[in-house]
Image 1 (cartoon, rainbow, N blue to C red):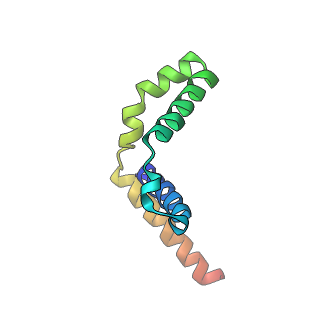
Image 2 (cartoon, helix red, strand yellow):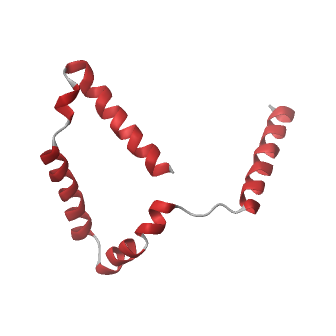
Length: 92
């Protein structure tokens, strides 16, 4: 879920930076995207040992899908938020 938010923030900030200075069509540069993506993947492959790379590739699906939310975890988070809210009201 957070990676979607990250993508939206990146695209929003890039578009917000370019749009006041020109047309939105200038942002569609497929070769630049290829260069940036290739450089990022190449730096990742160069900067990490083999066991890190294989671990990332093995867990890529779980990384994108995210962890399943358990009802018990959600309830404990809500109790913690309620506790903090009541402490804030009591002690300021």
